[in-house]
Image (cartoon, rainbow, N blue to C red):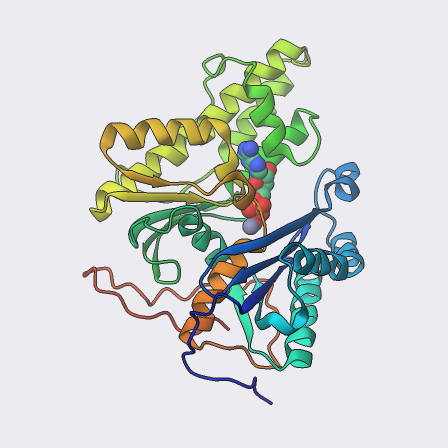
Length: 367
Ligand code: KG4
Ligand code: ZN
């Protein structure tokens, strides 16, 4: 059976609402926007405390916690937006990529609600969500831009022509930048999640104390590699058994962070230059990093680049970004079917932006 509406719809009503759900990893999140794109509620329930003792996300525990919290999170989002189920015209939910069990919870909850309400189901690629966050705090940010998606699972550079039209320029060949932060925090016994801990500690340290390697590749390479950096830290700690002092830990955090930030900034600017655009967006959990934000802001101002970094609440996983991407799908009439399944390894088809021209072609439907 198919959803009740098909084809492009009139999405201008400010009274009608779109509900979005995100459960791809360890945040249970729900958001409500009106159909003009105004954010009315953005609720995130973090699972940090249940995963922290294990030093990383335990997929089975994540899925179970999503089941327990999703209903309450959605109801809080509806309350915060002062609306009822009757106001909901469409439901967007993350289809993938992410943890299989975790994704299943949000997708099936969203599907059940959409079916009960007989409204369209919108299937959102989590990466499209992160990309959409680039325009949420800055609706006038140019559509023609380079976007760096930098999170716990991704370090991907895209040339875009709007939030859902893109061409992959480069990606990590091993660890994602967020993973590099998390693994370092584990080695330094700082706990989980690692990125925010290292960010905080680095503020008290000196970034030049230890010269960690920067993997920059060939002059024109837009790929990343962070596994050598992690290994360098491992060897440093092995060769300096007295590393566990507050001063040295702060210096290690600052030096390690600087190596990651150097690479991200260098490659992002390289991509902007190579693509001949003047706008750069950096999105995903690692875009919350204070040193990365400061360095990018300085470089953007020096080189006259228009920079977009989401407000902090939209950097790490949230449903507001899923709502924004879902609204695009709603406007385009790209609806999911009731037999849609979640996909832990969902990819983004890369056929939308030819490499030889800046003309844009629509992405194939998110499925
Ligand atoms: O986007 P996100 O919430 O989830 C994924 O889609 O992966 O990103 C989570 C990642 C984690 O690796 C976390 O350590 C990192 O983002 N992160 C940070 C900061 N805040 C979160 N990394 C560096 N500095 C931060 N302030
Ligand atoms: Zn994410």
